[in-house]
Length: 168
Image 1 (cartoon, rainbow, N blue to C red):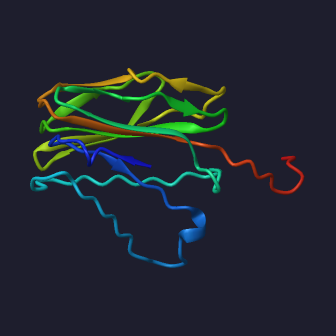
Image 2: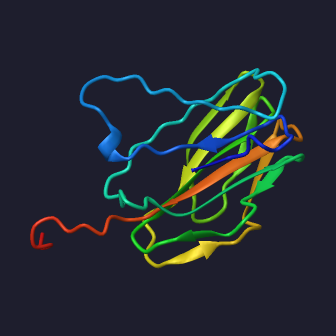
């Protein structure tokens, strides 16, 4: 989806997606590769999620990645979202014990504090209309923070496939 690996920062974020057609039956390993612009990795937080009714041919309505040398981070660019889709983000701050101020209408779904950093995941409810989040949409970290923050945002497009006659 997006990554901050090219940025010369010490906190990074990345997100990937796996189309349903590439999911094998049974237990299978998933390998993620992430190369940064330098330095040693001292901690790694991995989040995973599964979403239903996502358009398989073009799963993203919009995405963005950004990092900042402060205790906050903006989306960095506008993120388009579609009616009946939802938007999520994964974010990190280099402070062990940080908390986040979640922008509306996002709801925090995960927080993990270990390995000298804190990571977060959040998502919106299903969108009732289309639109976009501004480039300056901000996640602010509080508590025990550092001046190292990163975020990746993804807006999932809803499936356009109708099963059967579309009646419930």
